[in-house]
Structures are given as structure tokens and as C-alpha cells.
Image (cartoon, rainbow, N blue to C red; front, side, top):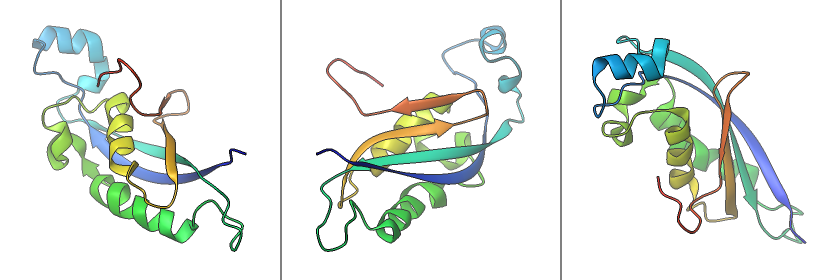
Length: 141
């Protein structure tokens, strides 16, 4: 039997989509208003899905308090109300697209000790969301 638990979290962060590998005109063409030199922000919804055996004593896959604490420490505290380009080391060399943010969150949460991380779903807007389930054969960041 495979059972999954999905827990939702919220965080707000700002970023600027700008690649050092592209010239100014190309950055403007690709990223449009998201290339604003002053950045822009989002109220992200992060869905964390874990899987595991149901503990016969608790009836749960994972202790929600333990999961919440882990997510708070690894994701909410380092990202919430931050300017991703400058405040988060991982995005000093990578464009902080929501795709890259989704993968970074997965990498930071995959060591959760009480259950197996299945996937991360990151909602950027009501129209854009991204899911990442880790690297498979041939996947690259």
C-alpha cells in the first residue's frame, strides 16, 4: 500500500529574472516585465508530498509537527521575505525562476528523516505552478 501526505505552506519572496549568460536585450525579450531591475515578488504556495508506512501506533505517515518544523527550518526561514537573487546563496549563480526554486526546495527537503519526499509543487500565481519529483535517469538541473 502506498499512501501519500501533502502539506501546504506559504512564503513570500522577490526575485529578478536575469541571466548573466544573456545580454540586456535578450534578457528583456525572454523575461519581459520579470526582468525589472528592481525585482518583483510572489506569494508562493509550497506543497510538500511525502510517502511512507503508516505507523500502527500513531496511524500517521509522518508527525505533522516534525514535518512543519523541518520545512520551517529548511525553507520558510531561509526564503520567506527574501530577495532570492541576493539573499539565497543558491541563486547567486542561477536565475531564480520558479522552476529553479522548486528544485532547490526539493533538494533542501529530501533528507527529511521520517518519510520519503515524493515531490514538491510550487504555485507562483493562480496560473503558474511547477512540480518536481527529483532527478531521474538523465535529468539535469
